[in-house]
Length: 276
Length: 306
Image (cartoon, rainbow over all chains, first blue to last red; front, top):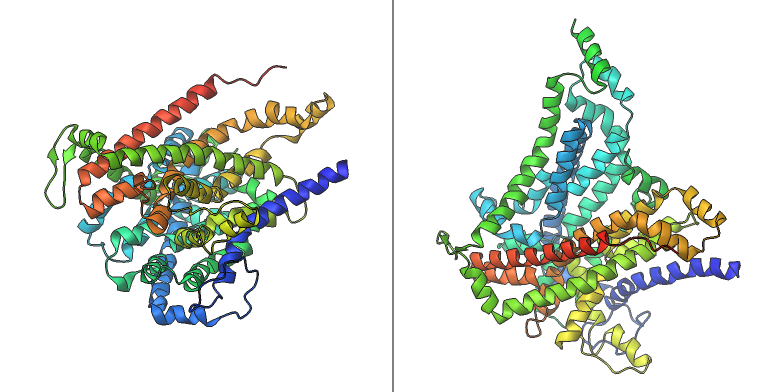
Protein backbone atom coordinates (compact mmCIF):
# COMPACT_ATOMS: atom_id res chain seq x y z
CA UNK A 1 0.00 0.00 0.00
CA UNK A 2 2.75 2.36 0.99
CA UNK A 3 4.59 1.51 -2.26
CA UNK A 4 1.49 2.27 -4.32
CA UNK A 5 1.13 5.62 -2.60
CA UNK A 6 4.77 6.50 -3.13
CA UNK A 7 4.47 5.60 -6.80
CA UNK A 8 1.34 7.70 -7.05
CA UNK A 9 3.12 10.64 -5.42
CA UNK A 10 5.72 10.33 -8.18
CA UNK A 11 3.35 9.74 -11.08
CA UNK A 12 0.78 12.43 -10.41
CA UNK A 13 3.19 15.37 -10.55
CA UNK A 14 4.78 13.77 -13.61
CA UNK A 15 1.41 13.50 -15.38
CA UNK A 16 0.58 17.10 -14.51
CA UNK A 17 4.00 18.20 -15.69
CA UNK A 18 3.38 16.50 -19.03
CA UNK A 19 -0.02 18.19 -19.24
CA UNK A 20 1.77 21.51 -18.84
CA UNK A 21 4.24 20.64 -21.56
CA UNK A 22 1.72 19.30 -24.05
CA UNK A 23 0.53 22.61 -25.60
CA UNK A 24 4.14 23.64 -26.01
CA UNK A 25 5.01 20.36 -27.70
CA UNK A 26 2.10 20.75 -30.13
CA UNK A 27 3.24 24.22 -31.00
CA UNK A 28 6.66 22.78 -31.86
CA UNK A 29 5.23 19.92 -33.96
CA UNK A 30 2.83 22.16 -35.84
CA UNK A 31 5.48 24.77 -36.57
CA UNK A 32 7.00 22.14 -38.88
CA UNK A 33 3.83 21.47 -40.89
CA UNK A 34 3.31 22.39 -44.54
CA UNK A 35 2.16 25.98 -45.03
CA UNK A 36 0.44 25.34 -48.37
CA UNK A 37 -1.75 22.41 -47.26
CA UNK A 38 -4.56 22.36 -44.69
CA UNK A 39 -3.37 21.13 -41.31
CA UNK A 40 -4.05 17.47 -40.42
CA UNK A 41 -7.30 16.81 -38.58
CA UNK A 42 -5.80 14.22 -36.30
CA UNK A 43 -3.24 14.72 -33.59
CA UNK A 44 0.20 14.37 -35.16
CA UNK A 45 3.06 13.45 -32.85
CA UNK A 46 5.76 14.14 -35.39
CA UNK A 47 5.34 15.52 -38.94
CA UNK A 48 6.28 13.10 -41.77
CA UNK A 49 8.08 15.84 -43.63
CA UNK A 50 9.30 18.48 -41.17
CA UNK A 51 9.59 21.90 -42.83
CA UNK A 52 12.42 23.57 -40.99
CA UNK A 53 12.43 26.38 -43.55
CA UNK A 54 9.17 27.70 -42.02
CA UNK A 55 11.46 29.47 -39.58
CA UNK A 56 13.45 31.08 -42.40
CA UNK A 57 10.19 32.11 -44.06
CA UNK A 58 9.29 34.15 -40.97
CA UNK A 59 12.30 36.36 -41.52
CA UNK A 60 11.36 36.87 -45.19
CA UNK A 61 7.71 37.74 -44.51
CA UNK A 62 8.32 40.29 -41.78
CA UNK A 63 11.29 42.29 -40.49
CA UNK A 64 11.70 39.75 -37.69
CA UNK A 65 15.39 40.60 -37.42
CA UNK A 66 14.45 44.17 -36.59
CA UNK A 67 11.79 43.09 -34.05
CA UNK A 68 14.38 40.83 -32.46
CA UNK A 69 16.91 43.66 -32.29
CA UNK A 70 14.34 45.97 -30.63
CA UNK A 71 13.34 43.28 -28.13
CA UNK A 72 16.98 42.63 -27.27
CA UNK A 73 17.63 46.37 -26.85
CA UNK A 74 14.70 46.67 -24.43
CA UNK A 75 15.86 43.64 -22.43
CA UNK A 76 19.49 44.84 -22.44
CA UNK A 77 18.39 48.25 -21.12
CA UNK A 78 15.75 47.13 -18.64
CA UNK A 79 17.49 44.21 -16.94
CA UNK A 80 20.64 45.96 -15.60
CA UNK A 81 18.57 49.02 -14.65
CA UNK A 82 16.13 46.83 -12.72
CA UNK A 83 18.92 45.01 -10.88
CA UNK A 84 20.47 48.38 -9.90
CA UNK A 85 17.30 50.16 -8.80
CA UNK A 86 15.75 47.10 -7.09
CA UNK A 87 18.88 46.13 -5.17
CA UNK A 88 19.67 49.73 -4.15
CA UNK A 89 16.12 50.20 -2.88
CA UNK A 90 16.21 46.78 -1.21
CA UNK A 91 19.44 47.73 0.60
CA UNK A 92 18.00 51.04 1.76
CA UNK A 93 14.85 49.33 2.95
CA UNK A 94 16.77 46.58 4.76
CA UNK A 95 19.07 48.96 6.65
CA UNK A 96 16.63 51.69 7.65
CA UNK A 97 14.93 51.49 11.03
CA UNK A 98 11.91 49.25 11.63
CA UNK A 99 9.17 51.94 11.29
CA UNK A 100 10.64 53.08 7.96
CA UNK A 101 10.83 49.44 6.81
CA UNK A 102 7.17 48.95 7.63
CA UNK A 103 6.10 52.12 5.85
CA UNK A 104 8.05 51.07 2.74
CA UNK A 105 6.55 47.56 2.90
CA UNK A 106 3.09 49.13 2.92
CA UNK A 107 4.06 51.37 0.01
CA UNK A 108 5.33 48.37 -1.99
CA UNK A 109 2.14 46.38 -1.36
CA UNK A 110 0.06 49.40 -2.38
CA UNK A 111 1.99 49.64 -5.66
CA UNK A 112 1.51 45.89 -6.23
CA UNK A 113 -2.26 46.28 -5.80
CA UNK A 114 -2.65 48.88 -8.56
CA UNK A 115 -4.20 47.20 -11.62
CA UNK A 116 -2.04 47.68 -14.71
CA UNK A 117 -4.85 49.13 -16.80
CA UNK A 118 -5.38 52.03 -14.37
CA UNK A 119 -1.98 53.56 -15.17
CA UNK A 120 -2.31 53.39 -18.98
CA UNK A 121 -3.99 56.72 -19.63
CA UNK A 122 -1.85 58.85 -17.34
CA UNK A 123 1.36 57.06 -18.28
CA UNK A 124 0.56 57.78 -21.91
CA UNK A 125 0.29 61.50 -21.06
CA UNK A 126 3.46 61.45 -18.93
CA UNK A 127 5.45 59.72 -21.67
CA UNK A 128 4.16 62.21 -24.23
CA UNK A 129 5.10 65.09 -21.92
CA UNK A 130 8.59 63.61 -21.50
CA UNK A 131 8.89 63.14 -25.28
CA UNK A 132 9.35 59.38 -24.85
CA UNK A 133 6.23 58.26 -26.68
CA UNK A 134 7.00 56.05 -29.68
CA UNK A 135 10.53 55.33 -28.44
CA UNK A 136 11.92 52.15 -26.89
CA UNK A 137 12.39 54.18 -23.66
CA UNK A 138 8.62 54.01 -23.23
CA UNK A 139 9.01 50.23 -22.82
CA UNK A 140 12.08 50.48 -20.57
CA UNK A 141 10.57 53.18 -18.29
CA UNK A 142 9.32 50.85 -15.50
CA UNK A 143 12.91 49.63 -14.97
CA UNK A 144 13.82 53.04 -13.53
CA UNK A 145 11.38 52.18 -10.74
CA UNK A 146 12.73 48.62 -10.18
CA UNK A 147 10.09 47.12 -12.59
CA UNK A 148 8.11 45.60 -9.71
CA UNK A 149 8.10 46.11 -5.92
CA UNK A 150 8.37 42.32 -5.76
CA UNK A 151 12.02 42.51 -6.83
CA UNK A 152 12.74 45.18 -4.21
CA UNK A 153 11.21 42.96 -1.54
CA UNK A 154 13.25 39.92 -2.64
CA UNK A 155 16.44 41.97 -2.22
CA UNK A 156 15.24 43.49 1.06
CA UNK A 157 14.58 40.10 2.64
CA UNK A 158 17.90 38.81 1.39
CA UNK A 159 19.83 41.81 2.79
CA UNK A 160 18.02 41.68 6.13
CA UNK A 161 19.38 38.19 6.70
CA UNK A 162 23.00 39.35 6.42
CA UNK A 163 24.32 39.58 10.01
CA UNK A 164 24.89 43.17 11.14
CA UNK A 165 28.40 42.31 12.43
CA UNK A 166 29.45 42.08 8.80
CA UNK A 167 28.76 45.77 8.33
CA UNK A 168 29.93 46.99 11.74
CA UNK A 169 33.64 46.94 10.93
CA UNK A 170 32.97 48.81 7.68
CA UNK A 171 30.79 51.36 9.48
CA UNK A 172 33.64 52.05 11.89
CA UNK A 173 35.81 52.88 8.92
CA UNK A 174 33.15 55.32 7.75
CA UNK A 175 31.98 53.34 4.73
CA UNK A 176 29.29 55.06 2.65
CA UNK A 177 25.90 53.41 2.17
CA UNK A 178 26.57 53.17 -1.54
CA UNK A 179 29.83 51.26 -1.01
CA UNK A 180 28.22 49.02 1.62
CA UNK A 181 25.44 48.17 -0.84
CA UNK A 182 27.64 47.57 -3.86
CA UNK A 183 30.81 46.06 -2.36
CA UNK A 184 29.54 44.23 0.73
CA UNK A 185 25.88 43.36 0.24
CA UNK A 186 25.58 42.68 -3.50
CA UNK A 187 28.13 39.83 -3.64
CA UNK A 188 26.12 38.08 -0.91
CA UNK A 189 22.87 38.31 -2.90
CA UNK A 190 23.87 36.45 -6.07
CA UNK A 191 20.98 33.92 -6.05
CA UNK A 192 18.49 36.79 -5.65
CA UNK A 193 20.17 38.61 -8.52
CA UNK A 194 19.87 35.52 -10.73
CA UNK A 195 16.17 35.19 -9.88
CA UNK A 196 15.53 38.89 -10.50
CA UNK A 197 17.43 38.77 -13.81
CA UNK A 198 15.44 35.76 -15.09
CA UNK A 199 12.08 37.23 -14.03
CA UNK A 200 12.96 40.64 -15.52
CA UNK A 201 14.08 39.13 -18.84
CA UNK A 202 10.74 37.28 -19.03
CA UNK A 203 8.82 40.45 -18.10
CA UNK A 204 10.32 42.66 -20.81
CA UNK A 205 10.72 39.98 -23.48
CA UNK A 206 6.99 39.16 -23.18
CA UNK A 207 5.65 42.70 -22.75
CA UNK A 208 2.80 43.08 -25.23
CA UNK A 209 0.73 45.84 -23.64
CA UNK A 210 3.34 48.63 -23.59
CA UNK A 211 4.26 48.44 -27.30
CA UNK A 212 0.56 48.25 -28.25
CA UNK A 213 -0.14 51.39 -26.21
CA UNK A 214 2.98 53.49 -26.69
CA UNK A 215 4.52 52.59 -30.09
CA UNK A 216 3.28 53.56 -33.56
CA UNK A 217 6.30 53.29 -35.85
CA UNK A 218 6.49 49.66 -37.12
CA UNK A 219 10.26 50.07 -37.19
CA UNK A 220 10.24 50.09 -33.39
CA UNK A 221 7.99 47.06 -32.90
CA UNK A 222 9.22 44.30 -30.62
CA UNK A 223 8.71 40.55 -31.12
CA UNK A 224 5.35 40.25 -29.28
CA UNK A 225 3.81 42.92 -31.55
CA UNK A 226 5.49 41.27 -34.52
CA UNK A 227 3.72 38.00 -33.71
CA UNK A 228 0.40 39.86 -33.58
CA UNK A 229 1.22 41.48 -36.95
CA UNK A 230 1.91 38.00 -38.36
CA UNK A 231 -1.45 36.84 -37.05
CA UNK A 232 -3.23 39.77 -38.72
CA UNK A 233 -1.34 39.07 -41.94
CA UNK A 234 -2.71 35.53 -42.24
CA UNK A 235 -4.66 34.09 -39.31
CA UNK A 236 -4.76 30.65 -40.94
CA UNK A 237 -1.03 30.19 -41.55
CA UNK A 238 -0.80 27.92 -38.51
CA UNK A 239 2.70 26.53 -39.11
CA UNK A 240 4.12 30.06 -39.38
CA UNK A 241 2.20 31.31 -36.34
CA UNK A 242 3.46 28.35 -34.34
CA UNK A 243 6.99 28.92 -35.60
CA UNK A 244 6.75 32.52 -34.42
CA UNK A 245 5.43 31.43 -31.02
CA UNK A 246 8.21 28.84 -30.67
CA UNK A 247 10.86 31.35 -31.74
CA UNK A 248 9.70 33.77 -29.03
CA UNK A 249 9.29 31.13 -26.36
CA UNK A 250 12.43 29.00 -26.71
CA UNK A 251 14.95 31.60 -25.44
CA UNK A 252 13.06 32.31 -22.20
CA UNK A 253 12.41 28.61 -21.61
CA UNK A 254 16.07 27.77 -22.14
CA UNK A 255 17.10 30.53 -19.73
CA UNK A 256 14.51 29.41 -17.19
CA UNK A 257 15.41 25.69 -17.30
CA UNK A 258 19.10 26.54 -17.16
CA UNK A 259 18.72 28.69 -14.02
CA UNK A 260 15.68 27.16 -12.31
CA UNK A 261 17.79 25.80 -9.43
CA UNK A 262 18.45 29.34 -8.26
CA UNK A 263 14.87 29.87 -7.27
CA UNK A 264 13.10 26.53 -7.21
CA UNK A 265 15.36 24.32 -5.07
CA UNK A 266 14.46 24.07 -1.37
CA UNK A 267 17.62 25.86 -0.37
CA UNK A 268 17.07 28.86 -2.61
CA UNK A 269 13.33 29.11 -1.89
CA UNK A 270 14.21 29.45 1.77
CA UNK A 271 16.88 32.00 0.88
CA UNK A 272 14.47 34.03 -1.23
CA UNK A 273 11.55 34.25 1.12
CA UNK A 274 12.64 33.53 4.68
CA UNK A 275 12.47 36.58 6.86
CA UNK A 276 14.02 37.13 10.24
CA UNK B 1 37.58 61.53 17.56
CA UNK B 2 35.13 60.72 14.78
CA UNK B 3 35.87 57.02 15.09
CA UNK B 4 35.26 57.11 18.82
CA UNK B 5 31.91 58.82 18.44
CA UNK B 6 30.73 56.43 15.76
CA UNK B 7 31.77 53.47 17.94
CA UNK B 8 29.64 54.89 20.70
CA UNK B 9 26.76 55.42 18.29
CA UNK B 10 27.05 51.93 16.82
CA UNK B 11 27.25 50.44 20.28
CA UNK B 12 24.31 52.39 21.64
CA UNK B 13 21.89 51.93 18.75
CA UNK B 14 23.20 48.68 17.31
CA UNK B 15 22.39 50.15 13.93
CA UNK B 16 24.36 51.99 11.25
CA UNK B 17 26.07 55.17 12.34
CA UNK B 18 25.30 58.78 11.56
CA UNK B 19 22.55 60.71 9.86
CA UNK B 20 24.76 61.01 6.77
CA UNK B 21 24.53 57.25 6.30
CA UNK B 22 20.78 57.35 6.71
CA UNK B 23 20.57 60.09 4.09
CA UNK B 24 22.59 57.92 1.71
CA UNK B 25 20.19 55.03 2.32
CA UNK B 26 17.27 57.26 1.41
CA UNK B 27 19.15 58.27 -1.72
CA UNK B 28 19.47 54.58 -2.69
CA UNK B 29 15.71 54.23 -2.24
CA UNK B 30 14.94 57.34 -4.27
CA UNK B 31 14.73 55.85 -7.81
CA UNK B 32 12.30 53.13 -6.71
CA UNK B 33 10.12 55.39 -4.58
CA UNK B 34 10.07 58.40 -6.91
CA UNK B 35 9.73 56.20 -10.01
CA UNK B 36 6.83 54.25 -8.52
CA UNK B 37 5.13 57.50 -7.51
CA UNK B 38 5.61 58.97 -10.99
CA UNK B 39 4.76 55.83 -13.01
CA UNK B 40 2.19 54.08 -10.81
CA UNK B 41 0.78 56.09 -7.88
CA UNK B 42 0.26 59.43 -9.66
CA UNK B 43 -1.20 57.77 -12.81
CA UNK B 44 -3.59 55.70 -10.67
CA UNK B 45 -4.75 58.78 -8.74
CA UNK B 46 -5.06 60.71 -12.00
CA UNK B 47 -7.31 57.93 -13.32
CA UNK B 48 -9.54 58.21 -10.25
CA UNK B 49 -9.71 61.99 -10.69
CA UNK B 50 -10.59 62.01 -14.40
CA UNK B 51 -13.32 59.41 -13.84
CA UNK B 52 -15.39 62.38 -12.65
CA UNK B 53 -14.65 64.56 -15.67
CA UNK B 54 -15.64 64.86 -19.29
CA UNK B 55 -12.25 64.23 -20.87
CA UNK B 56 -12.07 63.33 -24.54
CA UNK B 57 -9.08 63.34 -26.90
CA UNK B 58 -7.07 66.58 -26.64
CA UNK B 59 -9.67 68.81 -24.96
CA UNK B 60 -8.85 69.55 -21.30
CA UNK B 61 -10.99 67.69 -18.73
CA UNK B 62 -14.16 69.40 -17.45
CA UNK B 63 -15.80 68.42 -14.15
CA UNK B 64 -18.77 66.17 -14.87
CA UNK B 65 -19.66 64.63 -11.51
CA UNK B 66 -21.12 61.16 -11.87
CA UNK B 67 -22.05 61.53 -15.56
CA UNK B 68 -19.53 58.90 -16.68
CA UNK B 69 -20.84 56.40 -14.15
CA UNK B 70 -24.40 57.05 -15.31
CA UNK B 71 -23.47 56.44 -18.95
CA UNK B 72 -21.58 53.31 -17.92
CA UNK B 73 -24.60 51.95 -16.10
CA UNK B 74 -26.68 52.68 -19.20
CA UNK B 75 -24.20 51.05 -21.59
CA UNK B 76 -24.94 47.37 -22.31
CA UNK B 77 -21.34 46.84 -23.41
CA UNK B 78 -19.94 48.14 -20.10
CA UNK B 79 -22.44 46.08 -18.10
CA UNK B 80 -21.55 42.91 -20.01
CA UNK B 81 -17.86 43.72 -19.55
CA UNK B 82 -18.06 44.19 -15.80
CA UNK B 83 -20.22 41.10 -15.37
CA UNK B 84 -17.96 38.86 -17.45
CA UNK B 85 -14.87 40.20 -15.63
CA UNK B 86 -16.33 39.36 -12.23
CA UNK B 87 -17.48 35.93 -13.49
CA UNK B 88 -14.00 35.31 -14.86
CA UNK B 89 -12.33 36.30 -11.60
CA UNK B 90 -14.70 34.24 -9.45
CA UNK B 91 -13.91 31.17 -11.59
CA UNK B 92 -10.22 31.69 -12.33
CA UNK B 93 -8.78 33.02 -9.05
CA UNK B 94 -10.02 30.20 -6.73
CA UNK B 95 -9.10 27.54 -9.31
CA UNK B 96 -5.64 29.04 -9.82
CA UNK B 97 -5.05 29.11 -6.07
CA UNK B 98 -6.28 25.54 -5.61
CA UNK B 99 -4.02 24.42 -8.47
CA UNK B 100 -1.03 26.27 -7.03
CA UNK B 101 -1.69 24.86 -3.55
CA UNK B 102 -2.23 21.29 -4.80
CA UNK B 103 0.99 21.33 -6.80
CA UNK B 104 2.94 23.00 -4.00
CA UNK B 105 1.74 20.21 -1.65
CA UNK B 106 2.64 17.51 -4.21
CA UNK B 107 6.06 18.95 -4.96
CA UNK B 108 7.16 20.02 -1.48
CA UNK B 109 9.13 16.91 -0.55
CA UNK B 110 12.80 16.45 -1.26
CA UNK B 111 12.65 13.82 -3.97
CA UNK B 112 15.08 13.48 -6.78
CA UNK B 113 14.40 15.86 -9.67
CA UNK B 114 11.76 17.71 -7.67
CA UNK B 115 13.16 21.11 -8.58
CA UNK B 116 12.99 20.17 -12.27
CA UNK B 117 9.34 19.19 -11.82
CA UNK B 118 8.74 22.54 -10.14
CA UNK B 119 10.36 24.21 -13.13
CA UNK B 120 7.90 22.44 -15.45
CA UNK B 121 4.98 23.66 -13.35
CA UNK B 122 6.33 27.21 -13.55
CA UNK B 123 7.05 26.94 -17.28
CA UNK B 124 3.69 28.13 -18.73
CA UNK B 125 4.08 31.29 -16.63
CA UNK B 126 7.27 32.32 -18.47
CA UNK B 127 5.85 31.77 -21.98
CA UNK B 128 5.38 35.21 -23.59
CA UNK B 129 1.70 36.15 -23.42
CA UNK B 130 1.18 36.57 -27.18
CA UNK B 131 2.87 33.24 -27.96
CA UNK B 132 0.76 31.62 -25.23
CA UNK B 133 -2.43 33.10 -26.72
CA UNK B 134 -1.51 31.89 -30.23
CA UNK B 135 -0.74 28.38 -29.00
CA UNK B 136 -4.14 28.24 -27.27
CA UNK B 137 -5.83 29.64 -30.36
CA UNK B 138 -4.55 26.50 -32.07
CA UNK B 139 -5.60 24.22 -29.19
CA UNK B 140 -9.15 25.63 -29.34
CA UNK B 141 -9.36 25.55 -33.16
CA UNK B 142 -12.63 23.75 -33.99
CA UNK B 143 -11.31 21.84 -37.03
CA UNK B 144 -7.64 21.15 -36.45
CA UNK B 145 -7.20 21.83 -32.73
CA UNK B 146 -5.95 19.03 -30.48
CA UNK B 147 -8.62 19.72 -27.85
CA UNK B 148 -11.44 18.86 -30.25
CA UNK B 149 -9.43 15.92 -31.58
CA UNK B 150 -9.25 14.60 -28.03
CA UNK B 151 -12.98 15.21 -27.54
CA UNK B 152 -13.82 13.35 -30.76
CA UNK B 153 -11.62 10.49 -29.60
CA UNK B 154 -13.62 10.38 -26.36
CA UNK B 155 -16.82 10.36 -28.41
CA UNK B 156 -17.84 13.86 -27.33
CA UNK B 157 -19.32 16.39 -29.77
CA UNK B 158 -16.90 18.91 -31.29
CA UNK B 159 -17.16 22.42 -29.85
CA UNK B 160 -16.46 25.69 -31.64
CA UNK B 161 -14.86 27.06 -28.50
CA UNK B 162 -14.37 30.72 -29.35
CA UNK B 163 -17.61 31.18 -31.32
CA UNK B 164 -20.18 30.97 -28.50
CA UNK B 165 -20.27 33.27 -25.49
CA UNK B 166 -20.17 30.65 -22.73
CA UNK B 167 -17.47 28.46 -24.24
CA UNK B 168 -15.33 31.47 -25.18
CA UNK B 169 -15.40 32.62 -21.56
CA UNK B 170 -14.64 29.08 -20.41
CA UNK B 171 -11.71 28.96 -22.85
CA UNK B 172 -10.16 32.10 -21.33
CA UNK B 173 -10.55 30.59 -17.85
CA UNK B 174 -8.95 27.30 -18.97
CA UNK B 175 -5.94 29.21 -20.34
CA UNK B 176 -5.53 31.06 -17.06
CA UNK B 177 -5.35 27.79 -15.10
CA UNK B 178 -1.81 27.01 -16.23
CA UNK B 179 -0.02 30.24 -15.39
CA UNK B 180 0.02 30.31 -11.59
CA UNK B 181 3.81 30.05 -11.19
CA UNK B 182 4.05 33.03 -8.84
CA UNK B 183 1.46 31.66 -6.41
CA UNK B 184 3.03 28.19 -6.63
CA UNK B 185 6.47 29.48 -5.60
CA UNK B 186 5.08 31.62 -2.80
CA UNK B 187 3.10 28.66 -1.40
CA UNK B 188 6.16 26.38 -1.65
CA UNK B 189 8.02 28.92 0.46
CA UNK B 190 5.05 29.12 2.82
CA UNK B 191 5.01 25.33 3.24
CA UNK B 192 8.72 25.34 4.01
CA UNK B 193 8.21 27.87 6.76
CA UNK B 194 6.01 25.40 8.71
CA UNK B 195 8.21 23.52 11.21
CA UNK B 196 8.35 19.75 10.57
CA UNK B 197 8.07 19.11 14.32
CA UNK B 198 4.40 20.13 14.35
CA UNK B 199 3.54 17.39 11.84
CA UNK B 200 5.51 14.79 13.78
CA UNK B 201 3.72 15.72 16.99
CA UNK B 202 0.38 15.42 15.19
CA UNK B 203 1.33 12.00 13.80
CA UNK B 204 2.29 10.77 17.26
CA UNK B 205 -1.16 11.88 18.43
CA UNK B 206 -2.66 9.76 15.64
CA UNK B 207 -3.71 12.48 13.19
CA UNK B 208 -4.37 11.38 9.60
CA UNK B 209 -2.87 13.19 6.64
CA UNK B 210 -6.22 14.81 5.95
CA UNK B 211 -6.56 16.00 9.53
CA UNK B 212 -3.08 17.44 9.65
CA UNK B 213 -3.76 19.31 6.40
CA UNK B 214 -6.92 20.98 7.72
CA UNK B 215 -5.66 21.50 11.28
CA UNK B 216 -2.04 22.49 10.62
CA UNK B 217 -1.17 23.26 7.00
CA UNK B 218 -4.26 25.16 5.96
CA UNK B 219 -4.53 27.51 8.96
CA UNK B 220 -0.81 28.30 8.81
CA UNK B 221 -0.95 28.95 5.07
CA UNK B 222 -4.10 31.05 5.29
CA UNK B 223 -2.33 34.44 5.51
CA UNK B 224 -0.27 33.50 2.42
CA UNK B 225 -3.40 32.36 0.57
CA UNK B 226 -5.20 35.60 1.43
CA UNK B 227 -2.39 37.85 0.21
CA UNK B 228 -2.10 35.73 -2.93
CA UNK B 229 -5.82 35.83 -3.67
CA UNK B 230 -5.88 39.64 -3.45
CA UNK B 231 -2.82 39.93 -5.66
CA UNK B 232 -4.24 37.35 -8.06
CA UNK B 233 -7.47 39.32 -8.50
CA UNK B 234 -5.33 42.15 -9.88
CA UNK B 235 -2.93 39.92 -11.85
CA UNK B 236 -5.64 37.72 -13.38
CA UNK B 237 -7.73 40.69 -14.42
CA UNK B 238 -4.75 42.31 -16.11
CA UNK B 239 -3.87 38.92 -17.64
CA UNK B 240 -7.10 38.86 -19.64
CA UNK B 241 -5.92 41.70 -21.87
CA UNK B 242 -3.64 39.78 -24.23
CA UNK B 243 -5.88 36.71 -24.78
CA UNK B 244 -8.95 38.87 -25.32
CA UNK B 245 -7.01 41.15 -27.66
CA UNK B 246 -5.23 38.45 -29.67
CA UNK B 247 -7.71 35.55 -29.66
CA UNK B 248 -11.25 36.94 -29.65
CA UNK B 249 -10.93 40.71 -29.74
CA UNK B 250 -13.63 40.86 -27.11
CA UNK B 251 -16.13 38.73 -28.97
CA UNK B 252 -18.46 37.02 -29.44
CA UNK B 253 -21.01 39.75 -28.56
CA UNK B 254 -18.57 41.41 -26.09
CA UNK B 255 -18.52 38.21 -23.98
CA UNK B 256 -14.74 38.44 -23.59
CA UNK B 257 -14.47 42.24 -23.53
CA UNK B 258 -13.02 42.14 -20.04
CA UNK B 259 -12.38 45.44 -18.28
CA UNK B 260 -8.77 45.97 -19.51
CA UNK B 261 -9.87 45.57 -23.15
CA UNK B 262 -12.91 47.80 -22.51
CA UNK B 263 -10.60 50.46 -21.05
CA UNK B 264 -8.27 50.10 -24.03
CA UNK B 265 -11.14 50.56 -26.50
CA UNK B 266 -12.68 53.50 -24.64
CA UNK B 267 -9.37 55.28 -24.10
CA UNK B 268 -7.33 54.46 -27.19
CA UNK B 269 -10.00 53.83 -29.87
CA UNK B 270 -12.69 56.34 -28.83
CA UNK B 271 -10.33 58.63 -26.86
CA UNK B 272 -12.95 58.90 -24.13
CA UNK B 273 -10.52 58.99 -21.22
CA UNK B 274 -13.20 59.95 -18.67
CA UNK B 275 -15.37 56.91 -19.45
CA UNK B 276 -12.37 54.59 -19.47
CA UNK B 277 -11.31 55.86 -16.05
CA UNK B 278 -14.83 55.51 -14.69
CA UNK B 279 -14.94 51.87 -15.87
CA UNK B 280 -11.73 51.21 -13.92
CA UNK B 281 -12.94 52.95 -10.78
CA UNK B 282 -16.21 51.00 -10.89
CA UNK B 283 -14.26 47.75 -11.31
CA UNK B 284 -11.92 48.58 -8.46
CA UNK B 285 -14.88 49.27 -6.17
CA UNK B 286 -16.31 45.86 -7.09
CA UNK B 287 -12.93 44.17 -6.47
CA UNK B 288 -12.67 45.89 -3.07
CA UNK B 289 -16.11 44.57 -2.19
CA UNK B 290 -15.00 41.07 -3.21
CA UNK B 291 -11.89 41.39 -1.02
CA UNK B 292 -13.90 42.65 1.96
CA UNK B 293 -16.32 39.77 1.43
CA UNK B 294 -13.49 37.23 1.50
CA UNK B 295 -12.00 38.85 4.63
CA UNK B 296 -15.40 38.74 6.27
CA UNK B 297 -15.77 35.01 5.58
CA UNK B 298 -12.23 34.27 6.74
CA UNK B 299 -12.48 36.25 9.96
CA UNK B 300 -15.44 34.09 10.94
CA UNK B 301 -13.57 30.90 10.07
CA UNK B 302 -11.98 28.75 12.78
CA UNK B 303 -10.39 25.33 12.39
CA UNK B 304 -13.22 22.92 13.23
CA UNK B 305 -12.93 21.17 16.59
CA UNK B 306 -13.42 17.43 16.38
